[in-house]
Amino acid sequence: MRTARLRVFRPVPAPVGTPEGTPRQSHSVHATTGGSVLSREQIQIKTPQQVRLMRRAGLVVADIHAALREAVRAGITTAELDAVSAGVIEAAGAHSNFLGYYDYPATVCISVNDEVVHGIPGERVLTDGDLVTFDCGAYILDDDGTQWHGDAAFTAVVGGTYRSETDRLVDTTTREALWAAIAAVARAAAGEGSGRELRLNAVGDAVEAVVADVAEREGLELGILQEYVGHGIGTSMHMAPDVLNYSVKRRGPRLRPGMVLAIEPMLTAGSPATRELDDGWTVVTQDGSHAAQWEHTVAIVPGGVWVLTAPDGGAEGLAPYGIEPKALG
Ligand code: MF3
Ligand code: CO
Image (cartoon, rainbow, N blue to C red; front, side, top):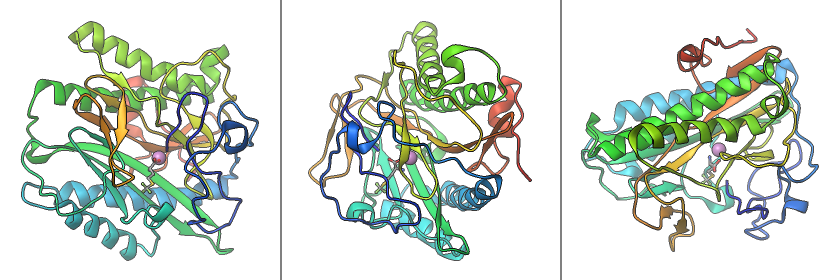
């Protein structure tokens, strides 16, 4: 998903139950019509039963992640990895929310090294040390034919050894930023804190704090993407609100049970400026610096969060913050 300052470059969310793949009227939609933190577009509030349906989708996405981690190695093509993802989705009886999304041609986005997001799988052969982001998604249908979506991303290094210390730092910091943001949302759900700590601002503030900490500790300034943001998710993949990875003055909506957010920090090891390749999708850094992205679909439940795309609901990722996920069972 993308946004630029106050302009929101993303499609208008489909109404509940509408199939994906509505034609791309325009690549950009103004915030006043497209919905964002700056608009009053309603945030879909899920019932506990709907959150359980989204957990099913989330676990399919977790299965895709596990299969890709297993399959990724030097010599494999990104198209072969897309086939792995497609196979998991099909075996689960789920559906791809990426394939056909504004004509996107695959079930996964695979972004290598200086590619940040939306890399299209193809004949590219991965080699040891490549820093690769896999962004995966799936939806399931409930008995009424309504779609319930999951969306999650991880970065991995092919062969297990980073090519540089910078690659290691951009990856580990992005992962830490994700969990710090999820922990901040969990604390808000538990009613801890005040003011913007109880609002959507908690996400961007947490990401910025982690990035500032690394800059101080390691002397490495990482770039936070501003043109691409996280999003609400539910009966379609991209819904209100936009989930910014940076701090803004304006007060975001109050975090409350029933909201489900795709939190997805994207960091570069240099300038956050990006450009889109001629394929109309692949986003690369302008300065050639490498990038990472980590994402989970996170449900806010009474008193905490349930990380729907993590098999353990977020237990391991939240443990360093002294927080336990609250599964609805
Ligand atoms: N998960 C991606 C995001 O939130 C969506 C990818 S859509 C696709 O930005 F069409 F590129 F697959
Ligand atoms: Co997403």
